[in-house]
Amino acid sequence: MRRNRQREIWQRVSRPLSLLQWRGRHQDHVSAGKAAAAAAAEPVPLPKPDPAAAAFFDVDNTMMRGASIYYFARGLASRKLFTMRDLAMFAWGQAAFRMRGTENSEHIGSAKEAALAFVAGQKVAGIVKLSEEIYDEVMADRIWHGTRTLALQHLDAGQQVWLVTATPVEVARTIAHRLGLTGALGTVAETHDGLYTGRLVGNLLHGPAKAEAVRALAQREGLDLARCAAYSDSINDLPMLTAVGHPHAVNPDAGLREHAKENGWPIHDFRTGRRVTMIALPAAAGAGALAGGVAAGIALRRHYRA
Image (cartoon, rainbow, N blue to C red; front, side):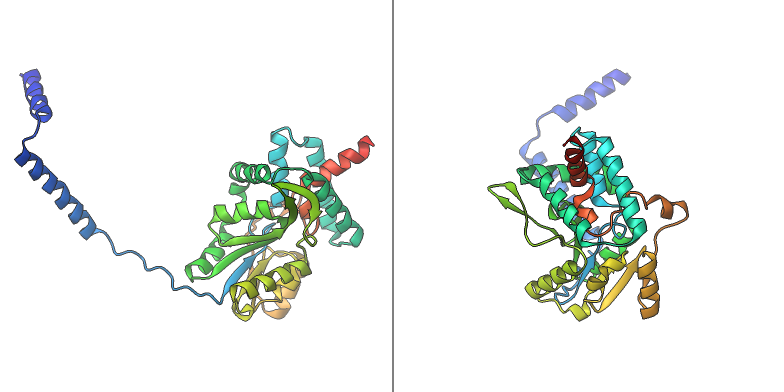
């Protein structure tokens, strides 16, 4: 009996529909669609654009735990394009550099030279592809959710949100794209016919250069800097922070925390307990961020081989 009943149902379902039956079922589909649309909740209104205001976020230790270029180097090491020894040498150098908390022209010059040694002759498309892969593999889990929430609040207010970092602009753009931000300002390497020439356009986007980039973008976009906000963890970004009307300290170093307190700036600290100590090793500061694990390691390796 059960099998007969199943066979009867199957024959009824598989039987070709008459024109009247087809029209009836089509009407059922239309009715169902209209009913679903009518029952849908009203969409949340899109924010009214606020074209005169924007927010600028540093990346390393502000938007991301540690240094973006360090993680990029780790990704290259996993692909055998960069050795773990190079990576360890870079991490040690960055830790010592951060503890000293100072920068000089010799260090900045070495960083620039190492960066140029790395990019010369490389395909731009290849670096972009690698940055996308490595972000998904290594960097995505290191984004500070608290900082991203701050960025999304500006987007929700209809404002542009830009990353500003000494990291190469190709890597910076990948991070901005993955986070759904407006874009990124980063160190720009000169290119020709899709290849890096081995020269920078200008200098490293560090310290005062960040402030100049923000001012140039504000002029291009018609932004009122008095209405803009900036976020950073480092006293080295004081020029950028003071270029806007609403500076914020995020996971600040000692110098920036003191300055923020003295000037009544908002302080956001998303670090807790042991994590504060753990992020120090891969943290890159200032000019060292561009050279990073990639360029610095290659330059050192060439030096020792010579």
